[in-house]
Image (cartoon, rainbow, N blue to C red):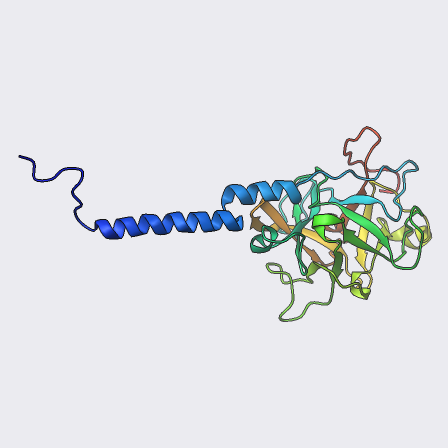
Length: 282
C-alpha cells in the first residue's frame, strides 16, 4: 500500500503555493503597468524608433524649419595623443532614462544625449533647426548665425539642445567635460551656431548659407566650445552600445578642430534614402 499519493501535500507546500500566487500577482501588476519586457520593447519601437522623414534640400543648403540628423562622420585615423578608437559615422540621439521612457506620453526634461551607430532617421536622432532671431521658416541657415536645435513634435517633446559651463557637480558622466542635455526651457544656453570647417576661411564664410551634408563645426554660443563625440567612453543603454557626447573643443597641431568635433547636418534626398556625403566646403 502506497503511503503517499498525488493528493497528499508534503513539505513546505503552503509556502510554495503562496510564492506561486505572489509571482502571478506581480506578473499581472507589471502587465497592467506596462512594465513587462515585451511591452517595453513594443512601446520603444512604437515611439522612439518610429521612422521620421528628413527634409529634402533642393538648393543644397540647410533651412530654418528643416528636420535633420546631426552626424559625426567618424575618424579615419587616430591621433598619437588621442585615446579615441576608430569609429564609423555616429548620429546624435536622445538618451532618456529607461524608467521614464516607458511610462510617459512624451520625453521628459532634462534628458540625456548620446551618439549611436544607427543612421536611420527616427524620433531618437532627428532634430529641427529653430530660429532664435525671428528668421522666417524656409530661409537658409547662415554660418555664424545663432539658432536652436530642438527635438521633433509628439513623443520627442520638442526639447531644446542645451549646455553650460561644467561644475564640480554638473558635468559629463564619464569624461567629466562640459555636459550636454535636452531641456524644455528656452534660454541663451540653447543657442548654437555653425562654423566653417576650415579655420583659415571661417571669417570669410560668415553670413553665407550652410551646406547640407557637409562637414561643419557645431559651436555652443555661450561657452564657445564645440560639440564632440568620444568613442573611448562607451555607454551601455537599453538600446545597445552607444558613446558619450560632450561640449569640448579639441585642436590639432594646426589649430584646427579634430574629427571628434566634425559634424554633418544631414538632410533627405528626393529618393527617400539617407546619404552622407561631403559637399564642397567640407
